[in-house]
Length: 431
Image (tube, rainbow, N blue to C red; front, side, top):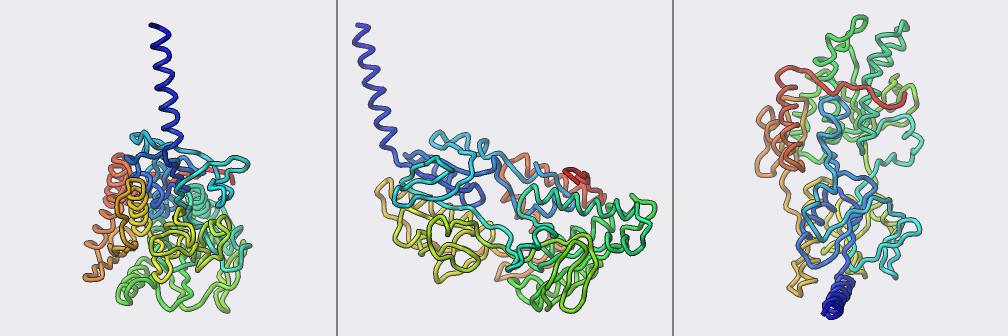
C-alpha cells in the first residue's frame, strides 16, 4: 500500500511539474508606473509572471522634488515591490539589472543569465538628457532617483551652511544663487518649493545670513513656462513664481555649465548649485531590441504597443513612442498602457477577443506653484489658485501606492501648510 501511495504521489508531482513548465512565461522589465500596473493586472492569469528591476522599490517620481526640498522623506514616496506584489502567487520579483534581450531565443539577458519569456513587457522609463553636453551631468543635480533627490537636498542645504560660514561676499552670493534649468512641471515645482524653503522654513535658522536673500533663477529655452499647458495657465505660473521671488529667464537656452555657474545667452550667472530639469531620453531599450530609436531615444511601437514584427514584445511608458500618436511622458499614460497590455496578454492566453488599439484617456495636467497654488488643465475646465492646489494634492495622493504613504504625505503636507516647517532637512551622504 505504501508503495502504491508513493507511486501515486510521484505521478501527481510529475504532472504538476509538467503543467508548471507548460505555463506561459510573462516577463516585465521595470517596476515603474507602467510595469507595476501590468504586473498587478496579471495577478490572476494562468501564467508565470517575473518582474525584473534593479531597485527593490517602486518610486513615485512626481514627488521627488519634495524630497529634494526637504518636504518629504524618501520612504514616503517609495514602496517595496515584493510587498506590493506579495498577494499574487503567480508573480516573482527578480532584483537584477537587465543587459539585453535575445529576441530570436526569446530571453531577457542579465549578464550571463537568461530569463526566458513567451510575452515580454519593457517598461524601463527614461533618464536625463543633456542635449549633447553629457559633461554637464557632473556639475548639475538631476532628479530621477531617490539617490539624486537626497544628493540634491544635501547640495541645497549645504549651500546655506557654507554661506553661513563664508567671509567672502562674492562666494556667499554664489552659494545663495540657485539655477534651475528647464521650465516644465518639474522645474516650476522645484523653483516654487525651493523659494518657500528659503523664505519660510530656513528664514530663522541662521545668524550671519538671511536665507530670504537667496536668488533662484529658472531658465527655459522656450518663450514660456509649462509649454504643454495652455498659454493662460503658463502666465499664471509665471506670475505665481515671480511673487515667490523667482527670477525667470525665458527664450534663451543654457550654452555652458561648470562648477561655478552657467551661461545663458551672453549672460553668466555665478552659482554653486545648478539643477537640471530640462529633458529626458528613453532607457537603452532600443539598443536591446536592435531598432532605430525614435524621438528622445524611444522605441517605435504600433497601435497595440507591440514592437513591429514581434507581437510578443510590448514596450510602454516613457520607453515607447506610439507611431502616429505621440503621448506625454506622464504617469497616467504609463499606467493606462500597463493596464491595456495586461488585457491584451490575458485575452491571448484565454483565447478571447483582444481589445482594439490603445487609446489614451487624458485625465488632465497639473503643476504646483509652492504650497498654496497650482494650475490644472482638464481640457474642458482650467483652474488656478488654492482650489487647483487641492486638486493637485488629491490627485497625487490618489496615485500613491500604499495606505501608509498616503496618510504620511497628507499629514506632512498639512503640517507644512500650517507651520512652514520641513522635518526632512537632513544632510546625508558623502560630501
